[in-house]
Image (tube, rainbow, N blue to C red):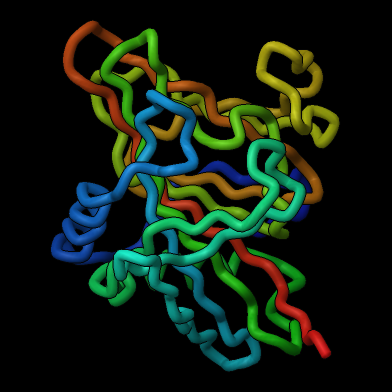
Length: 252
């Protein structure tokens, strides 16, 4: 169903049903509790992030996931680099984020999510080189409605990778917003208030653990609205795993 929807309409909104242990679920939640502030976020925006990159060997009977090495900053912290090329109007160059922990990289649920996502792509499994995978852990918070939480880029956009999958890990009770929009390609780089109704293909809100959506990048654009507090006081939070796939190429 997910693959068919990606082919026919460019996106799919679905509940990911995988078997998992409570230990693996808790391990994912623990990783999100440790995310460092996103140094690329605008001032006073509460966004937290880690990133990892890997390759999938697609020609094996059962595709295998292999994590790529990290680099270290001047303080000895492990970093992984992410480059969207010209597809993010807010960031044109490589961004380095704190790397996912070794513990979460060995999480069976995370590996199963990644490999299940890959099975729902098309046009990649016959590629003669490894497939590049980017794995983002992103948490956005809001404790003051004058300072809403939001993702980057803050507009309808295309990611640049052929496929992106997004999986909800946690959505707190005291939260408004965080609405996902799927738009036509013509909506790319437009703010929500600039997009006409006929450019919006679908909108929905992810509510449950591993409720998900996926996009075929060339067919649609997408956007996530700001999050705020439903009631004053406390904090709202939305945690997502984002996984993207792209082809590698030989460079001589």
